[in-house]
Every structure is written in structure tokens, then in C-alpha cells.
Image 1 (spheres, rainbow, N blue to C red):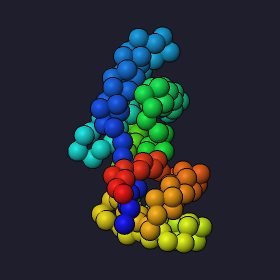
Image 2: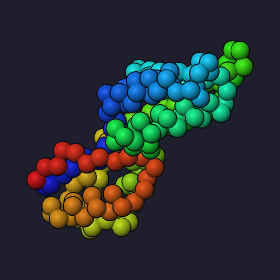
Image 3: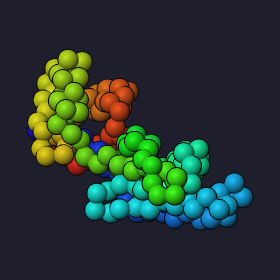
Length: 164
């Protein structure tokens, strides 16, 4: 029986490269002079820490980061912005969490969507942070992939491990 996996992954090396480029640009741009703006990556969480002298500069730094991520083909859907916090010396700080994997709620939503509008012989099961979709025919699975690509679930989806 043919199967494939639906996953939501992010290439951390590309994120790291985008953060390095953002840091370089923040250190050289005139409008960021003397604002103590910084962008750092926490590999364990995975999350990005933005810091700057004011909330306006923080938003500008986030915009520069987004531009660099888009150039490196990292979907902006993985970014989950936290609330802006006040830091020492009237500066602002924000944590941006990277959404990696499919949560249980999203997996249920994707499964429900597949069941309601997908081809008849297609079934699914949740396996940790991914969703395994199986069907009787390869054409049914290709139709399911097309359906999932057309619908926006709020997270980037990749289709891996296609087996006949």
C-alpha cells in the first residue's frame, strides 16, 4: 500500500546563515548605529532572540531577519513571535519561537481536512510530530498532496518518504 509522510521541518543551517547575515547588516546599517541591536539563535529551544534599544528598532530588525529568511527559502510560517518585553536601560527584547513539527491540533486539522475533501481510499495516522498518509493507489496520494498544498494550515508542510 503506497504511503507518504507529511512533516513540518525547518533547515536550521539556513536559519543560522540568515541570522548571521542579519547580524552583519545590523552592525553596518546607519539606522541601527548605537541601538545595541542583536539577533541570536538558541539551538536547544529552537528560538531566535531579538534585542534593540526601542520597540521600533526591534520591528525593523525583525523585518531584516524576515528578508534574509525569505532569500534563503525558509518559510515565514515557522516564526512564532512572542510578546515584546521591556529589558534593562529602556531597551526591548522579543523571543521568536521556531515552530518545528506538526502539533497534535494541526495533525487533527490536517486529518479532518483529508477525510472530508480527500480521495476516498486515503487514510492517515499521527506518528509523533508527523502524519503518515496511506492509500490504495498512487494517484490518490498525489491528489491528497495536491489538496494539502492548496490549503493553508498556518505551518509549512513538506512531503517525504513517498513509498509505492
